[in-house]
Length: 357
Image (cartoon, rainbow, N blue to C red; front, top):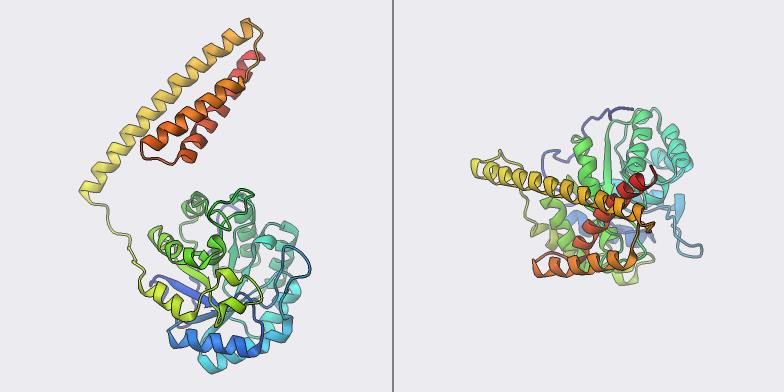
């Protein structure tokens, strides 16, 4: 599929042109009392869409995996008593069938499911003939093609009210976030499909309450369409993901202080600055070309003297020096190291190509 066939999400009572679209509610629907208590508080603060996990796929067995279909009447009660629309996650065709039969207004597909093309196709087949907004979370691993493929499968089933949820990517070496944002991936998704609404999930990216506010603001600064945030009437006692859920009043505080920056026409001064960036980028390309030319000369020397292509001592020296230089110049050392790791990788590729001729 060359492109996605999209139409507006067309969510009743929600202004498509106003940002942010907010979807809020507990990670899990635990009890009817907990669901209704949270829903009433959110509705009283203007929230239009209530989310709650009914089926909860967990990383390991033994944890709380949701109340299943028994919780769907609770969401029906939320809609009847508060007027909010309802949303839940589906991971299997039987989940889709039960959610549609219960009148759920919006469905989302989780990261673990997105990563499985077989599961995605089964869900897509079960959605044929339905007219409902569907949001697809990014896969666990940072693979934009897998994410787009999942969106295409749902779109291929006739679902045009389609959106994406950015919830970050798993990594074994996380320092701050539960899931690394890797903002460049949703940015690339937006570049390829500018009409696709992208919703940010700060709860799963941050994994901590104190990170939700800055992540919400960053998502708005980057032009995201909306937010899906976990909010619980008593977060500390939540049966799942307690650390990343906030009270409805705290969520209201966060949303009230968001600064929404709209897209405006490019000004003359901004155009002038961008021209400077273009000039510098051209200079960088010229410098990289010269660097690779020298790398190929080094390859010729190594070939003549029967030397290994990769000299680990030299490689470590480059990374350490450039990382330290980056810090002195006001840049993140890891950022600079990654740049030079990529440059070294290309240099090695070119040297290997020359040596093996």
